Image (cartoon, rainbow, N blue to C red; front, side, top):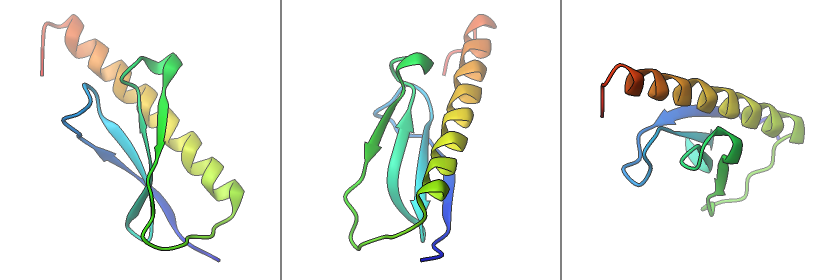
Length: 87
């Protein structure tokens, strides 16, 4: 049950900002986006090709890290827009 969860910053053309993927054994299990603003972040749970079992606290920690990274990305996006840089 000691699966390794990680987070990855991902550019998805379906979203204006960055997407943060939560992965287990290199397979995406959830994606966090801030398309509707940081106060309305969404999480998309991805159907998995296999069953994963991990500690709930590990998953909650990964979610919290993904949320913090989304806040940071949203702030950087805002800073770029203020400087007139559009991407």
